[in-house]
Amino acid sequence: MKKNLHKFESTLWLIIKTLLYFLLLLVFILTLGRENIGLTRPSRTLGITVSTFIVVGLLFLSVYGTYDVGRKKSKPLVYSLSLAVICTDIITYLQIMIMRANTDIHEFRFRGVKFLLFAIIIQIVIIIIFAYGGNGLFFTLHEPEKCCIITSSQKSLDEIACAMQRYKKQYKIVCVLDYRCPNIQEEVRHVDTIFIYDVPAEKRTSIMRMCYKYKVNVYFNPEVEDIMEVNAKHYVLDDVYLFNKNIKSLTMEQRIAKRLLDICLSLILGIITSPFWLLGALAVKLYDGGPVLFRQERATIHGRRFEILKLRTMKQGSEARSATTDDDRITTPGKFLRRTRIDELPQLLNVLKGDMTFVGPRPEMNKNVKEFTEELPEFKYRLRVKAGLTGYAQIAGKYNTTPKDKLIMDMMYIEQFSILRDIQIIFQTVIVLLKSDSTEGFGKAKESGLKFVPYVEKSTDNPSQNNTDKR
Image 1 (cartoon, rainbow, N blue to C red):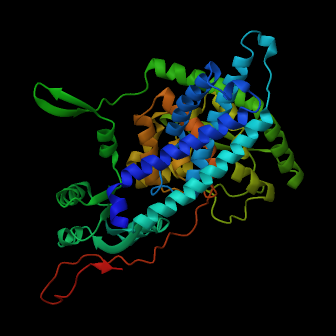
Image 2 (image 1 turned 120 degrees about the horizontal axis):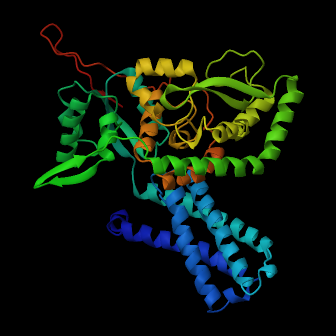
Image 3 (image 1 turned 30 degrees about the vertical axis):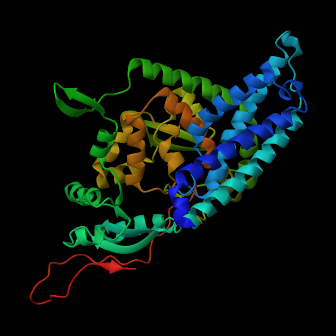
């Protein structure tokens, strides 16, 4: 049975996706049709509404993510699809209300809001069923991929293995190798997937060529040169095929557009979120009577220093260092403010002033910038743009994401900058509020339970040494 399904698997998932999206549209039409008679029969209203729902839906699916079972866990899948359909519903609903008032603007009313809310609830239930059911079907059809990790140290092994162990249905670690091991080729041929992590670029290239030769999936962590290559343009010079990467700062037009976006958003969101500011400030003041705002010097573009503003979430006089897991410096109201990100709302004043931008690399403490730059000289490249209130690293990563991974994510954002990309990240920021581990503090070093055995060349004194660790 499984073999037959594998033959038509791509068609099966196409049918399931089409059915999901059709059901979401159908629920919206049937529910809103109870208030809008034009949706109950073939009409201009129905045609425009269906077209709007499809176009806007595709747009928000590109922002939040599609029905990507097998690669996403069920809960994140529910979050992304739910946000996409809620945004689509709201915009399509507004379009219907505008059409109903097209003869007289004074007739504009928000009618049938209860039907809109009911439609959203039913759609979320459908999404939950399809997310958990789809992943269940996918992992019934597919066994976990047999994976080999090729790395350079126990620390690096723990970092990548701990991440993989959160996806046990996708990946099964069967082998761990030191990249210096001579029998890598033999191991590559007997697994489905290779993870190359923290391996010198020249050695990584040879391993990747092996993977290509034997048609083995490969994952690897990128370096600066990889980011340049990913964002390069294809260029043919006469008949010579080249990659071209222009290294430059934001253009004048881009800087102006970004600044206008910052001013508009900081003013609008500042007004909308003002009640949360006031309630948060009141909670901080009533808890211990101390100052409401927390001020600290941070680094922004070109290393320029500025004073960041936040609602205080720690006890007065606390040591200036990054928060850790179960940090006893964090106050009771501070835990809620950090979890909901309300403590960061005063940074809208930093954005309005021009010290920060709405989207950009996280403004690190000066102490951290110094330490990270000593460990990773490339870390200073993050300072080529202004520090941001939100950003790609804040969305894709966590508070305690490693400096190397933060650097890679921030550089990807810098090299792929566009105003549309900024708008996309702003919409995706909502997902951060739903992630329970997004504010996870720094804790003890990760331990995967796997053992890394460094490769030592065999000698006549100890001919039995090798570094293959199979699990």
